[in-house]
Image (cartoon, rainbow over the protein chains, first blue to last red):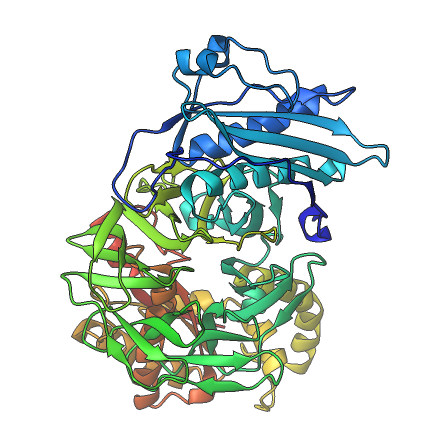
Length: 441
Length: 164
């Protein structure tokens, strides 16, 4: 709950940054490269802040390492001992242990009780400072500070916006295949601060964040009537969306947060509708006897990509936000589902089923440049990190005939197809949705 | 959810069973033929109408991969269900549409709904009143049979009629 309390993080001092040339830079758009060796000595804890200084350092290092772009140089090898944020690095000492980047920092308690964390990022070979910041917050928000520091290091070195200060909402699963309990849950992108959002009495699925992170929209079998609901994440209050005959499902927010797009199914036909959250009016966008579902807005809100079997099997289509100009974009072998538009606008991620194998793939919005980046017995439901560089999805393992030994886990993979990682979740997990970046830049 | 309904119904039926006996209610908890869905549902459940339907008909019909077309076998089973429903005019039904796990969650909600409605349309064409039929899609969320193999998948692509 604390993350919505609008943790106030002040970037109060920008320590002086010198101009640099031929500096350390990691390109995240192209092919894979060896992770950049980075040295991150434990931040110096001033006064009684030693423990939190160590914890913050660990979270920063874990974020950077998990991105696949950095490799932490073993701390046993460090020659120079950094005594606070103002210690000037002896660059030959760091060059000797082959660290390309160095982060040093310190944590102190301000007289007003706030935690002040300052750090500097150094380019070891160019012998220059790349970044320096001091951040203040309430002591409880120390993890958030750590993620913001990791984001600024990532941003400085890649030129891309970060994605570490984010949350993931998903379906937490437990029990036998035939008596599966599926509850909504939320956690930080590194698995910390796990919390259930629903009690498991009614099966709940496909949660998605509102752009301002105050609400989620999801699908539930509450009262035996499968429908789309809204939940206020802070209060836990839920609200049925609209008064539709039949089933409403596959909801997503529009990028401005003012409306939803979803499927409505009546009498054996599913079509796509938008729903204005202010006027509470629905508008039919597709009108076809085929199944039309899994709609997702382009980041500018002008177009919608969706899944339809109108050609005889499932393919991806794009239409204008009012339902006009429907155009098929996928033409490859196999079937395509769950299209999601990247926040950068450059790609659409999807699930593809071909020859009995499930894949996660990406293509450009015009359908060109299709690339399959992950596969498995069953992989499904890609969701984009807010910088459009990483996808989260879920993988299901086959069940035995007693409904055991299967299960589902969340994974992430770079859009380049490298750096596949499993998320550490307390239970089985599926149906992820990645939040926007939580701090203002 | 049906289980929960059943639990409530059992509690209610302890009371209504006595009353029914005195009034000489039939199997459907309704002595005079007046249609009261609330009374009927509870007494039908208590008297095991779901089991009776399951014993006397073929309650499940199966589909091919990604299809909601009714096979000859499925049509025969549904015709049998329709006859039973005509013989048991106060019974109501829910048709549950199900899918195998080899599809995506959201598409399967739609496909399950399409399967349940294929069965519904056939029953209506065979004389069952539309207001006795409710449909619900479980997509791939409520597999009939456990396991990740062809045999289990074939059984999980179905429309299951539950009478009450």
